Amino acid sequence: MKSIFKEWRQYLLENESPDTSQVVKLVLLNKHNHVLFLKRSNYMEKYAGEMDLPGGHIKEGESMLDGLKREVEEETGLEIFRATLYTKKENIAYFRSVHEKGNIILSNEHTDHAFVDVMKIQNPSKFEKIAIEVVKDEQFG
Image (cartoon, rainbow, N blue to C red; front, side, top):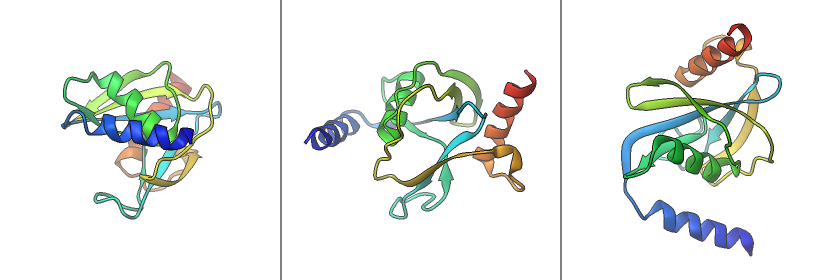
């Protein structure tokens, strides 16, 4: 029953304010410096089936950090406590944080998740490239 109320609340919140063109993404590291990636559901209009970082569009009147926290909680069920802006590229702001606690509970936007050792990726996508930069900064920073 609690899940139904949570989903209804999420639906209401998502439909309150329109999305902006500003996107926020989170590079979430675990204790091994592996990065959380989510697999987008096949029904998604854009990038169906692709691996993605948690995040999405912020709402009008919402700060980037508040939008990030909302999007991450909606997509993973995780509460983010300490996120810092890493870089901005075009309309995407990338934040970094450490997975402190909580189990990942995926929304219907994603079908799977994994903490990935990005340093082993041969031909990285744009999100994987950002994740590699963050991990390198953690290791050598």
